[in-house]
Image 1 (tube, rainbow, N blue to C red):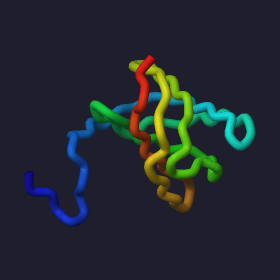
Image 2: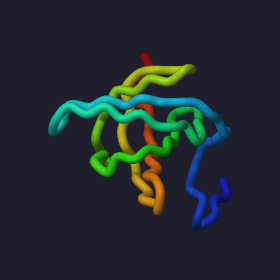
Image 3: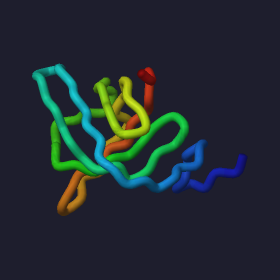
Image 4: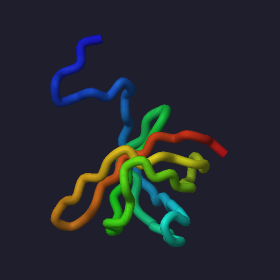
Amino acid sequence: MNLSIHEKRREVRRPVAGTVRVRCSNPEPLEIQGHLIDVSPSGFRMAHACLSLAPGQVVEFSRVEAAGRAQVMWNRILEDRVETGFFVVEAG
């Protein structure tokens, strides 16, 4: 498999539209609603306004096509939003 230095994804992502909700309780209860950007067989990316999600944190998620638990892999802080990439650890 030939991956460029900038593109290390192993799965194809497909763009989607819709809402996604994530909930966590560590360190304190938090619920975030955001918009899906894209999905892959093992994860998804969402845009939202919360700066509290940290890589490694496990959250519960729900969206139209799926629900379960996912691990925060990365955050990208932009001018008007935060983008977060998730790896699904348990589909519900």
